[in-house]
Image (cartoon, rainbow, N blue to C red; front, side, top):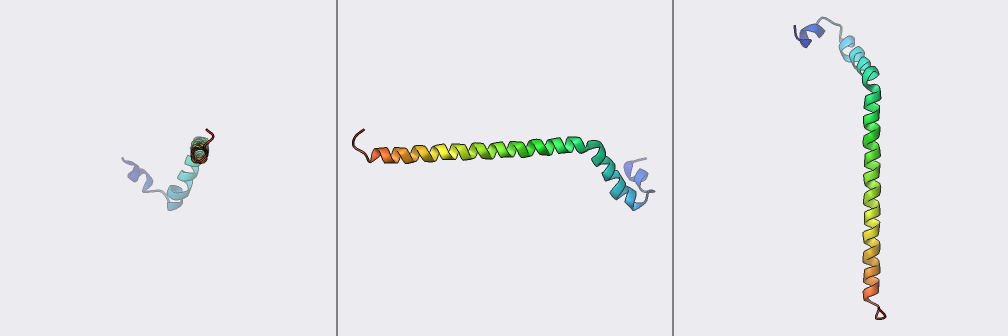
Length: 72
């Protein structure tokens, strides 16, 4: 007997409401920790990109300003 045969005799609300709710209760902590990890990782990547972009901008700005001066 396959899974379709097992679920075919049940009402629709068991298949579409009760089973997903049970899955969320059982795996909810795991799902929340994975989502939290991914959000934290995305935030760290965005901060890293912003900092690197800021450093590149400052270096180019000071390099362009220094090349116009003759006292170096």
